[in-house]
Length: 116
Image (cartoon, rainbow, N blue to C red):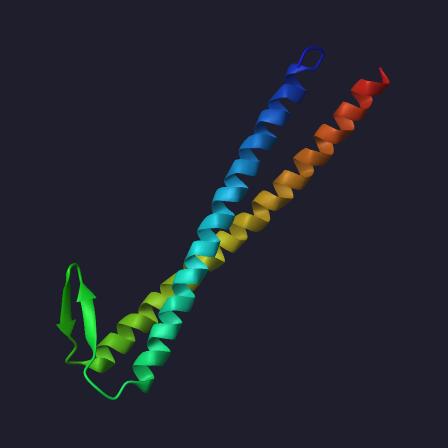
């Protein structure tokens, strides 16, 4: 990085940090979405169920006596996941904008440096 201004070096460092943050947020969002889909599928299967229903609790399986309570818990979990996914989507959008802006700034600065 000889011949690169300290300001440009700083922008490159910021760019790399934003890139890592964007990857982390995108990964979290994908994991949350997979969990949300799994909860939705669980609720759908619960709606079809006619026999006894069991819930895992640590290493144990416990028979569910109140299906309405279980359905409400699933609904709450799905709603919480959707809120978290929305938050991650907003973070992702913000990071993408910052990423693009830094990329353009760095490319412009590198282009100017080559011309000199």
